[in-house]
Image 1 (cartoon, rainbow, N blue to C red):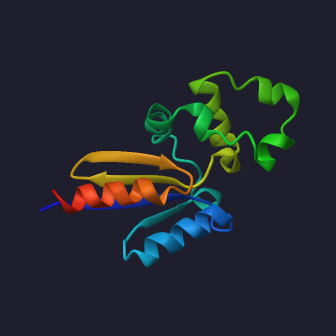
Image 2: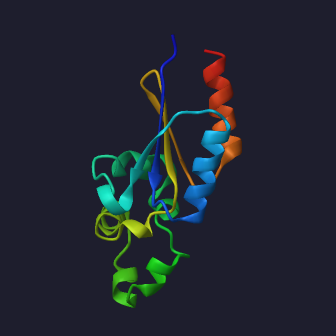
Length: 128
């Protein structure tokens, strides 16, 4: 039997997170919500997120939090380690939502609202 566990990471008042949560609910998919504001960005998950999507995609450099950083703080983000440190210090800097779709020990990771990707994972899960 296939075991699926979905975790959606984000901030509850983020419009993209709201849209994503509504999509999962409408699809009848159970998921766990991890609130960055209350629970922080999980340091032990950051390496796998960065490996899967790249630090450049994970760090939202178009958002308000990035724009509020001074030029020196922005310039200091040069790679995986500095991006991970910034994500820990400023949870709102992470592009949202991060979705982990775990199927029988394998984890798929996405960033942002990507229902076509989630549909692909869902379809592949159904065929297992």
